[in-house]
Structure formats: structure tokens, C-alpha cells
Figure (spheres, rainbow, N blue to C red):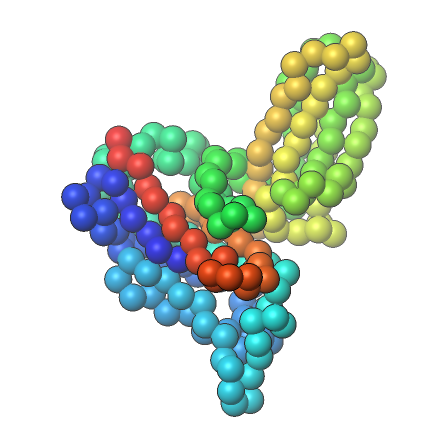
Length: 215
């Protein structure tokens, strides 16, 4: 991954670190993967020889999530407000199929949390989806006095989720983007980077560029 910041004339920005989350750390140990940061380039290496030998094909469809820490106290003073997380939120960066990054501010929740229903119209349908689109919960709220719905994502765990709600007859759909992370409120951080290894066709698609916009 190559990181730049448009605030700087040369776009050079190395004041960041990437740390694997617990699930990714286990995967890296099993696969014998190694990471290394050189200036503003960050690499995730696999070993093509030795006891941890593997191939690029064996890594296809593997998913990884890394905690992104910014090591510059003045970062928010010269960075676009769109890239500064709101209170109790993180920036979440995901790589698309064509190797482009997109960013969104996701509110952090625990494995069990209460969701505040935004619509006053009834019935209102509430859907909980994984980032990749799998619907985990689809419920209809009938009672006008019900303003809170409790979620428990213990089974699917720490990851990005989308909560959407709409009504019948149809009104404007409202969506809340969240990231469930158990230890966030004890050890806060700037954001997370998620990517999935793609088949190497032609030029290596598993190269990503993260560019921070200036204020």
C-alpha cells in the first residue's frame, strides 16, 4: 500500500502505522505472512520458500483488517474534515475490485448494542448487513412507542456493518454505518483498512494507494 497526502508538495506522508487486528494476526501467523513499512510504502509479504512457503493463488479471497494509527498530532489541522472521524467513530478504508480505496466514517459499537430507530413512521423495516452485503437481521417494528432495537453480533464479531431502515409506504431510506470493535473505547485509534486478496491477472491488482485530501 502506498500512502500520500496532498497537503505536502511531494505528497510524502509516513506518519502512520498499520497493526493487524486479532483475527488478521492469527491468519498472518498461519500463513507465515510478514509486513514491512518503508517510508510511505507498506508491504505484506508471503514466503515463496521455506517452512512457511505459500503462493499467491493460495492467498486469493483471504481477507485482512488492519488498525490504522496516525502518528502526527497536527494531522486534523491540515487534513480534509471528511477524513477526520466524528466522535465515537473511525475512518474505514476498503479496497474495491478495481483496486481503488473508498472511505467512510463508521460509528463504533460493541458486540451488543442498542440502535436508535430514526423513522417515526410505522411499520419500519430494519436490516443489519455485513459490509459485503450478507443480510444478518431483517425485522419489522410495528409499535410506535418502540424507539430502540437491540443487536447482538457476537456470532459474526468485529467487522463493518450497515444498518438500514425504511417504511411502508416507502419513505426515504436511512442508513447508519458502523464498525463493531470490542476494545475501541479503551484503546482508541484513527481508523481501519480492509482488503481482500484478488487473483493476480496482468498487473498485480493487490497494490493500493491511499491518498489523504488536504483541508
